[in-house]
Image (tube, rainbow, N blue to C red; front, side):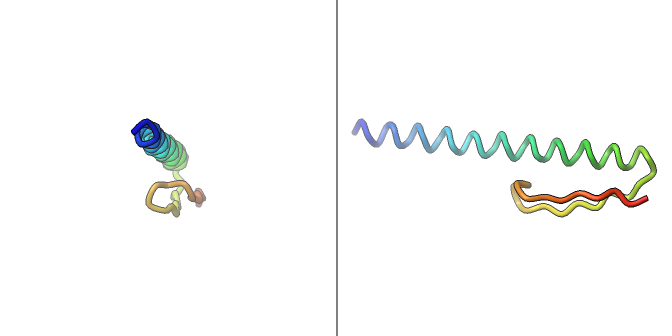
Length: 60
């Protein structure tokens, strides 16, 4: 029983970490897009579902 509790806590921590990292990546992407648009650029973003892999380019 003790091992199941530790495993459950570890899974919850990993899931929480993934959500936090995804949120921070989305925030970074949004900041880059907003900065590009403020300089009259056209933001081009490619990202996967959780935004762990993403590329950004600001065309002027």
